[in-house]
Length: 64
Image (cartoon, rainbow, N blue to C red; front, side, top):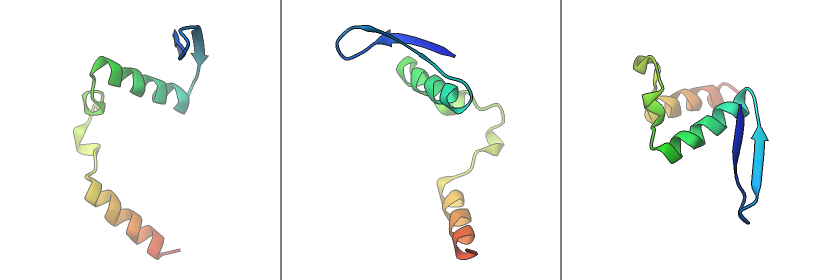
């Protein structure tokens, strides 16, 4: 993915990324376009509640 924009001084910049960086760039562009993360999720049943994630993380830490 290639992103073009302007830096803080109004000069053109270009950033290329793939993998996780490309996903992060797309996520931030979506914010600018008013698109929420859940709009891109194909299977909403795969989303976890924060409380479920917290409980899972607590269990994993307890095993360390």
